[in-house]
Length: 101
Image (tube, rainbow, N blue to C red; front, side):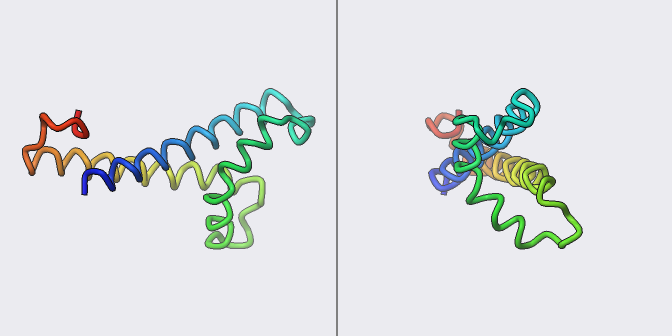
């Protein structure tokens, strides 16, 4: 179970970093961000997370706001997984285990 929680946490972490990097490049690159290779790469990395969020959000949510909503949802999920991982380590008394450090 600890291995699964660690794997989910890493996946969420990578997605959060991709969305944060995309936001930073959105500000720095401005209108030319679509031609930026790194921005495109970050969009590809975050696409498996933004597409399902687009499908579950109402039509009133603009497409440009979907990455922000995705970031917030992933941040909440990351916090939940982190707390569950900490709870597992404490309740199972696995504090000395490599995955619990």
